[in-house]
Image 1 (cartoon, one colour):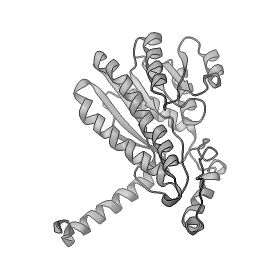
Image 2 (image 1 turned 90 degrees about the vertical axis):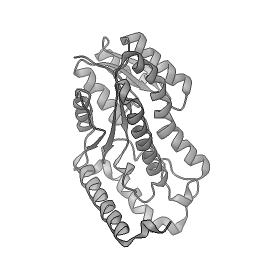
Image 3 (image 1 turned 180 degrees about the vertical axis):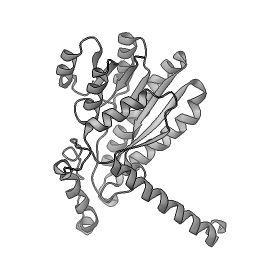
Length: 275
C-alpha cells in the first residue's frame, strides 16, 4: 500500500537518501529543505510522486505550510520523519545561552512544532506514524557534544510522551537511534564562540573523530538508514525505539548494561532511601 510521507532535512545526508529511496519505491513524498531548489533533480526524476516544500523547522508558519502542502498534494500524511537537525560542538561550559537556544530550537522545538501541526490531520484520519530521528547520543553522552546530546535526550522524552498520549488515536511513534553515518554532520558542526583550553583533553579527540568519520571505510552509509526507515514505515506495529547501524547497537547495549549495573548497585546499597 502506497503511503504519504513528509520528510524534513532532505537537501543532503540521511534525509536526501530517504527521500530518494521512498520515491524509488513508489511512495508519495513531500520532501522539505530550507532551500527547496536543492531538490530539483529529485523532482525532475519523480514528478508525479514527489513534491518539494520550503521548510525551516524553526518557523511555525513554514511548518504549517508544509503540512498543508502534503494535504493538498496527497490528501493527508501517513508518516512524518523528523530528521532535520545539526550538531553544536562544545563542552558544557563553552556553550553560550544563545548557542544552546539555537540548538534546541532546531533539534527539539522544530520536531515538536511540526508534529503538533500534523496531529490534527492524524486525529481526523485516525492514524499516523511519527518518526523522530534521535541519535545514539540520545542515550550515550559524548565529550564535546553536551548541547547536542541534551537535545537528543529531550527529543526522546518528547517522543515517548507523544506515544502514551496519542496511541489511542491511532498515532504510532518510533525513535530512531542512528550511529555514525557518512553525511555532512561533521562539516556542519557549529563551533562555540568561546573555547576553554582545559577541556581540550576531553573534547578535542571527539572533534577529530567526527571530522574524520566520512573517510572511515566502516562508517554507515545513508542508504542503510533509508532502507531501515522505508521498511519501518511498512510495519503495522513499529517499535518505539530502533537502533540504526551496528555501531549504534554496540554503544546502546553497553550503555544500557552500565545503567542497569549502576541502578542495581544504588538499590542494593540503600542510597534510594536517603530521602
